[in-house]
Structures are given as structure tokens and as C-alpha cells.
Length: 183
Ligand SMILES: CC(C)(COP(=O)(O)OP(=O)(O)OC[C@H]1O[C@@H](n2cnc3c(N)ncnc32)[C@H](O)[C@@H]1OP(=O)(O)O)[C@@H](O)C(=O)NCCC(=O)NCCS
Image (cartoon, protein in one colour):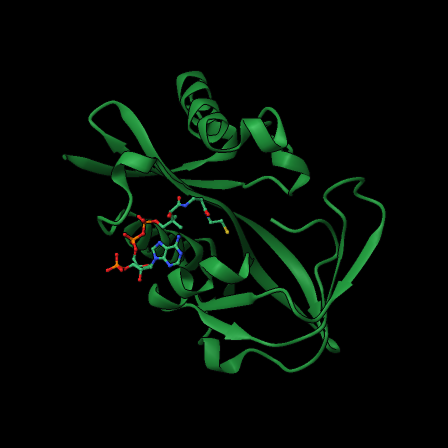
């Protein structure tokens, strides 16, 4: 497999890449969540930077992030809210997910965000931890991806952060308000 990684701003995604992303996501999620929408993927917040993996011309993996100022306790924190982490089935368990997460982290540093931030299912948290992300425990408040209005508060969904411009060790204490829908 000859893998190439590209980092592309959302506004600069070529039409063909959007079509390829649609196929990548629809294969995985269409049955359960319906069609992928680049500007509102399954009700989550959209990425403004995409990290894309190609095998030749075939799109085989994706990680996206969006810059956002969120509240953590009394302070504002600039995060790269990360989502759309997906590797095509045929390319899984070859280290590609790890590589994409590493490139996303570099792109976040370039974008000047302080930390990477994501929420995930319990069963997939070990993947992010193996990529060097750190699990934190805090109360999290966000808007529901279902109607983008209802406020959801949770304490038990896994939250993971990574260093970008700032070290993950300096993540401030306190409850988190995502000030919008998650990624
Ligand atoms: C999660 C996912 C992106 C991982 O990509 P990948 O390219 O297979 O990951 P890697 O090969 O870099 O895996 C590195 C390590 O992470 C862990 N890992 C990989 N996939 C995992 C999973 N689904 N659950 C838990 N741990 C996982 C393993 O320890 C693995 O090392 P190993 O293969 O030596 O055991 C991929 O399985 C995927 O696309 N899954 C479906 C979509 C999904 O669930 N995305 C996450 C949404 S929050």
C-alpha cells in the first residue's frame, strides 16, 4: 500500500474528494445514520481542516478537526475539536489511524490551537490512548447533535485531549462547555 497523507482546509476540498469522503462515510454509517453531509456530518459540527489518507487515488482514511474556543471552568480554551475518525475496513490495524491522528495533531499545532479534544465511545478510547491522547474526567455540556438545541450534560462519556500548542498536562480543571455541538 502506497499511502499519501494530505491536509486540506474544508473550503478547499476538491469536489472529487467530497464525493470520495461521502463513499467512505456512507459505507460505514449510512445504514445506521443516513447520508453523510460534509457541513453537518450526522448532526455533529463540521471539520474546518481535513487530514486525508490515500492509497494511490483511493481515499482510505480521514480525521477532521474544527477550531473552537470552549469554556473549561472559568477560562476559554482554544481546541481542535476532532471527529470523523475513520479508516476504510481494508486498511485497518495497519497503523494508518495512528498516523492520521499524528498528522492531525501536527496540523493543530500549525493552526495554533492549544489542545486536541474529542469525545468517543468507551470501546474505542484505547485506540486514542494508544495514539498518545490523554483521557480526562470532567462534566461536559454541549448541544445535542440531534436537534442542535437541547443541552446535554454528561460525566461518563470518554473525553480525550492531546497536546498541540500547549502541553496536555496544562489542561485546566473544571467543567467543560463545548459552546455548541460536539465533533
Ligand atoms: C478506530 C479506527 C480509526 C482505528 O484505525 P486503525 O488504522 O485500525 O488503527 P491503528 O492500526 O493505528 O491501531 C493502533 C492501535 O489502536 C488500538 N485500536 C485500533 N482499533 C481499535 C478499536 N476499534 N478499538 C479499540 N482499540 C483499537 C490497537 O491497540 C491498535 O494496535 P494493534 O493493532 O497493534 O493492536 C478504525 O478502527 C475505524 O475506522 N473504526 C470505525 C470508525 C470508528 O469507530 N471511529 C472512531 C469514532 S470515535
